[in-house]
Length: 97
Figure 1 (cartoon, helix red, strand yellow):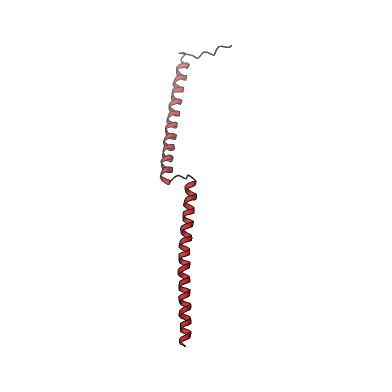
Figure 2 (cartoon, rainbow, N blue to C red):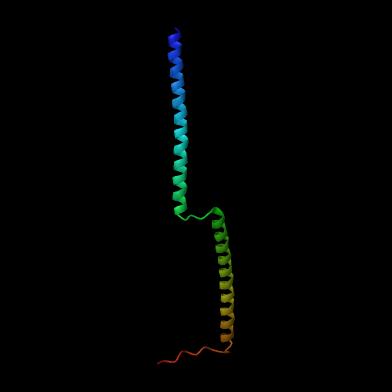
């Protein structure tokens, strides 16, 4: 009977060692995959979320400024048209060549 226990003890130790080896292998594979993924992502020249948010805010500000300038231009064109409508400074047609 003691022989059976000894065989089972040896088998349990062997299984435990195999599990430890597999756990170590899993850790190594995860580390290699993580490293490869980080290398791949860094080679793609992606921007961070913070950089994206800054550029988005700059674009929104530029769009707002462009809309304000378009409004000012429209107002200036109306003022010029009103002055021309009064007869002051009518535009001459370009000379023909």
